[in-house]
Structures are given as structure tokens and as C-alpha cells.
Length: 435
Image (cartoon, rainbow, N blue to C red; front, side, top):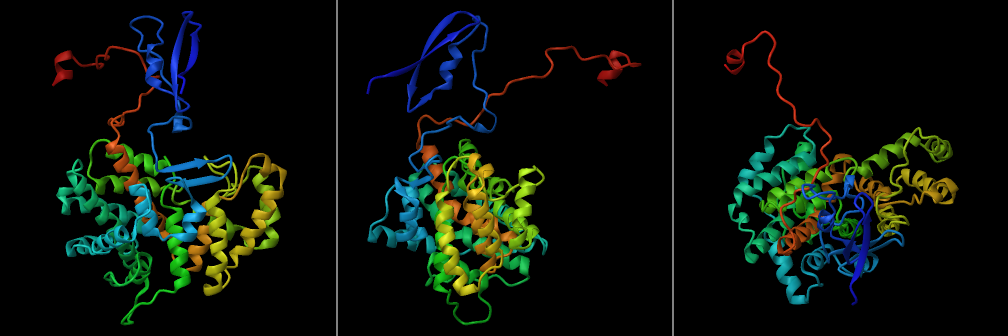
């Protein structure tokens, strides 16, 4: 392909520069040559929130926000959700292709046989207050795991990395279930290796005194699909945190803990909880119109609509909307669904929202489904983290293997005081001030 260039003229000096364009980007280090004099540091880009800055090259996830497209390793998300389970999807995201039968057997066996927690970890978790947030427990326990597996620091060994991937994919659901049981004052359940990945998670959550827990297949499939939809989403806040912490060559347990901490925020993993609060505030279908008027007046926000990336209908939201009907056939219809459907109908027809390209995102329906399945609101970001662990690990390993990557160290624009001498303390001699 013929080389492409961006020609820039610096009107401060009159000099012209030719900057190479690769993959639709300009390397911001090429801006450093643009100076007013030899002592000048050089030009930098300024992009708060990284709205238009590419920090890496990746082959994991592709998003076309204008057309509402989401691909994992080139495969459309709707086709994956329809034909594959979460563990197969995790294999695809981390390894680049779907597994063969033999590869899947080995993959699922290794993950399944790393679901157990060290008994000391259970004691560690029991030390949290009865009302501790499950996400706080998950984050703290993930970080604590690094002390149990010191070999995880050997990140340059492919076999060691693979072992930590098995451990994390296996143990995150166990920790998540234990965090839930802790908040309910219930004893922790041990994993059942005869169940599927998602079925075992439901077992660890909800098994009571029955000898064998049998998950409802409809709910098991629905939750498994939700894990798939949350598995990766390009360079979002938590994924970039995983890469940032991992770039210092931290062990993956601490890096995943940091990513989970980023997910904990209400602007990221807590968004579906905000949707539920909004629906509760609206109260009934006939009050939706009045709420829409308040949104237009700037009095309240329309939660679950719009996205930094998507300027079209979030493809994950379409899939979740279809799942909702299957779940409600089992659990009974969630009364909030009628409010949500009316809210969506009005918003998609109203010129105010159409002009702003505010379409439902993945959080709009997921919270309603979680609630119908019996999950407390505090567990929602934990459920998100289970699926997203696969994406975090894929991003982490891709970053480690990328020769272009260095320890993350963004630049800043200093706007503070220039050099000034420290004032002498009033009423004190210099010798006293130094004492």
C-alpha cells in the first residue's frame, strides 16, 4: 500500500512537516519534532478521557458505533451468543479462534478444576462485615490471591500465564458466589464440577439443603449469554486499567483486581443499577411521558440510553431484549419491563432523542433480567466482572506480547506556578526554620 502522510504547517514558525499515517492514525511521538526552538519540548496531543486517542493495537474486539456492530475476533456478537457458550467464547477471545473438541475439553477441564478456593481465602472473606459490598469483597480477594500464587509474577513464561488464566477464570465465580452468600449470612457452597461453568455458579449462589442443585436450563442459558455479551468491549475504562497496571509487569491477580475496581464505578459497571433506580422512580407506565419531559428539561438523566462508542442501537441490547421474554416465562413478568418498553418506544420516536442518537445500551435491560432472576442489586457489577474477566485477561496478554508497549505513563500539561523561591517563615531565623 502506498504510504500516506499528513502535511502540517506550524504557523508559529512557518515550517511544514510530513507525518506518516498508519491505520488511520498519526503517531503522537511524531508531533514532538514540531518545535518553536531547539529547547522546546515539542508538540503534544491533549485528549482528556482519551476520547480520540489510540493507546494500543488490538485484534480482540471491533466496534463500529455508527452502525451498531460488535465483533469478537471478527465474529458478530449475535452469532456467537446464539451458537456458543461462555467458555467457548472466552477461549475465542483469549486465543483468537474457537476451540476444537479436544481443545475445549482441555480448556473447560482446567478451568473447572481451578474453581476451588484455598481455605485460608475463605477465612479471609469471612473477615468482612456482614453488610460489605460484594464488589468490594471481590476486589480485595482477587488482590489477596496474588499472595497465594507467587508464581503468578512470572509473567514472561507462557505456561505460567496460561495457569493464571485458568485460575482466574475458575475462581472469580467462586469468589463472587461466596461474596453473595456472605452478604446473606449463608455458608459458602463448594463448586460442583459436574455442572457447566454458569450452572456451577448458580449452584454456588443458590444451593440450600438439597443434595444436588439442578439449575433451570432457561436461566442458566440466559446468564451464560449475559456473560458472553459482557466478555469484552474494546478499550473501556476497566480494560485500559488492566493494560495500564499490567504494563508495570504486575501479576495478573492484582491487575484484575484493579480492573474490577474500575468496573465498580457507577459510570461503568454500575450503570444497570442506575437504570433500575430510574424505573422505580418513574413507578408506572403512565408516568413515562412526564419523566421524558423532565429529561428534556435537563432535570434528570435518561439512564441506559446512549454510549460513548455507539451512535446506533447497541447490538447487545437487542440480544438481551430477546432473552428477557424467555426469562420472564420462568420467573414471571417483571412489572418494570412495561415501563422500560414504553420508555424505549417514546425515546426511539421522539426527535429530541433521535437527533442525539440516544439508543438503548446493554445496561437498559440487563438489570431487569438480573432482578427477575433473584440477584440483589449489589451483585450486578460482580456479575459483570465474571464475564469481563475473560476480556481483561485477553487484553493483558496481548499487551504483554506487543513489542510496541511500554509502561503506561501519560504526559500532562502543567498549568501550575513557574519556578519560585520558598518564602522565609515570618518571625523565625533561617536556622530555626531548618530545625
